[in-house]
Image (cartoon, rainbow, N blue to C red; front, side):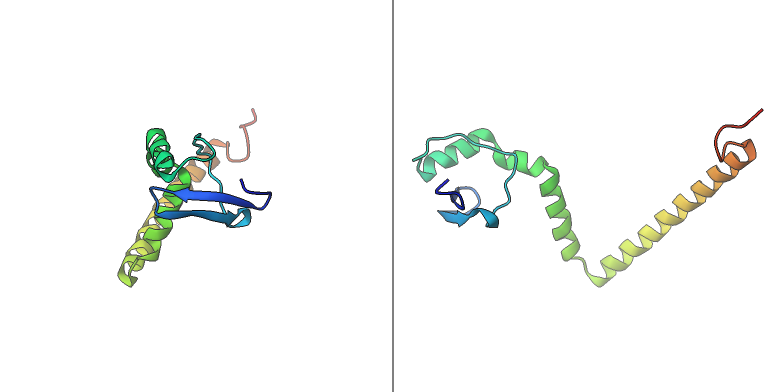
Length: 117
């Protein structure tokens, strides 16, 4: 932390050069590494690798969402068509199953709560 609006960043494994950046340009994660305040990039890299930050990041929900977004961005027209057809089939199966369940619940008298005797 340099002051209340700026921090010192260093990304030894992500090719981010050491430098200052404004806090409103950052997205903080839950991952934390402890090392001396005046540590060199070599020390930061060693702490990064010892903490296995890359593996932890790959397992996080945030990283999975980023990967899914990148995957959607590279879809071709035909891939989007196949995806739309698969979703349509899935929704058709889901609706048919729901209608069967609703019909049996209606016949049992449990559609609107417990059956009164």
